[in-house]
Every structure is written in C-alpha cells, then in structure tokens.
Image (tube, rainbow, N blue to C red; front, top):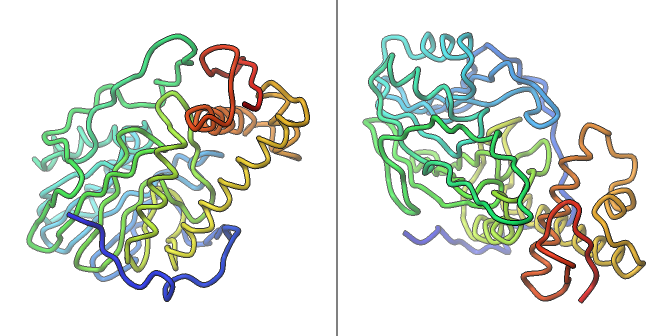
Length: 313
C-alpha cells in the first residue's frame, strides 16, 4: 500500500538541524500510558547506544500486541507479562533483530502463545573488507511470520501496517498504528539521537531513502525504540536528512584536504567526541563513504573497510 500523503509544505516549517529531546519520564521498570491505545515499558539496559533503555510497547486494550519486547532480561520480561495480566496477547511485533529489541520475544511467546511477526531473520553479508558486527543481531530470533512492506496485522483493538525502513539494519521495519495515526519507528528515527548506521548490515543509501519515504507520510507522532516521542515528525525527518547531507559534505571536504583514512576523517569531522563513540562514528563514516563510492563521488584502493584508503573521485 502506498504511503499516506498530505500537503507536505503545510506540515513542515523550516528546520535544518535536528533538535534532540531528552525527556525526564523514561525510568525503567514502570509501565506508563502514553496514549489511549499505547503503554510503554523501558528495559533496564541503558548505554551510550540505547539511551535510558529499550522501549517496549503494549498496544491495544484487552486484546493487545507487544511491540519490540526487548532484551533477554528476566526482570523486563516479567514486568511485561505482569502489565498484560488478564489480557490476551495476540501478536509480538519486532522492528529488527538487534539484541536489545528481539530476544525477549521467545519467552513472551512461551508464556502467552502469541504469534511472533515482523522483521525477517538476520541475513549476514560476507566478503572481502567486511568487518564482523553480527554479534549485535539475535541469531536465535524465530518469527512465525516475516512481514513484507504494506502488510497489515490486526487484533480486536489494533491495526498495524508494515513499513519497510532499511538502513539502520537491513531487516528494519516500522509499524503504523492506524487507530492513532502514529508510527512505531524502532531505531530508524529517534528523538534523543541520530541512528547508528554500521556496515556491513547498515546502509547509508538505504537509510536516506527511508528518510525520504517517511517524510512523505502523514503520521502525527513517532514512538521510537529508545527515548521519548518524535513530535512534528515530518520536520524532524527533514532535519535528520539535512544533517546527514551536511556530514557527507564534511567528509568530502576532508578528502579534498588530503585525508585518506577513516581515523583522519573522524578526528576532524567529529570534534570533541566522547571516546566511547569513536567506533560508532567510524562506522557511520564508512557508511557514508560506501554510499559516496556507489554514487561515483569517491574511490578507494580496495573494498571499503575501516582500514581502506579513500580519495575523492
């Protein structure tokens, strides 16, 4: 099904830099109702990459779905099950198979009998130049149904439409809740930070296409996999795309100045970066360089990798 479209100019006011929001109500372990159809439970897995923790969502009332059940953490799993006590869980939806999002699905299925649906199983890329970051994926994930773009999943109190949103992960999906005109955006768009795009599974070209697609939708609010809601999402997505294009220009500028390696580029482009995030910045830079090579703007001495030498084409 085609994405919803409205007069986009009316939805977007000028915004060229994303303004990140850090809400104060994201404590782990407590269920909070964030809308008439949606409850949120934050897992206790904070980190520089997960913010305060993974957001699991209970959608519907009485007959419910659990979206992104989270890590394989018994405390979080028990809290989710307690939150839906007395209700029927019809579906467990998974946006993607990173280990902070999908592993709890199996335990919740055993406890409730719910069907696991959503992202396809992880399919690793291999070949010369690829670095192994597959440990971030849940290799035990076993969905009952892998969903394709445009498919719908429904219960008595919820109707989801699947939106293919690759980039952060090749198997990433978002889910539009038709009852509230909102979007569960997983890790592709978050209000607290930009998404990590880490090759080989992550693709900057795919991610930019995903942002273009989301801009053309008319969702009123996003509920992401980490952090608080994304309000005025069309403006925000536009700003994210502009931010990535600015980063691309900065990388090309460093190549013109004579930098050839990712460490040289990262040191100049990401000034005053938290040392714990250098690895993520390096992978994001590699993702940009892969995309620039595909577009004929950059060349490399061999298959793109973290230790490849690059130059402007």
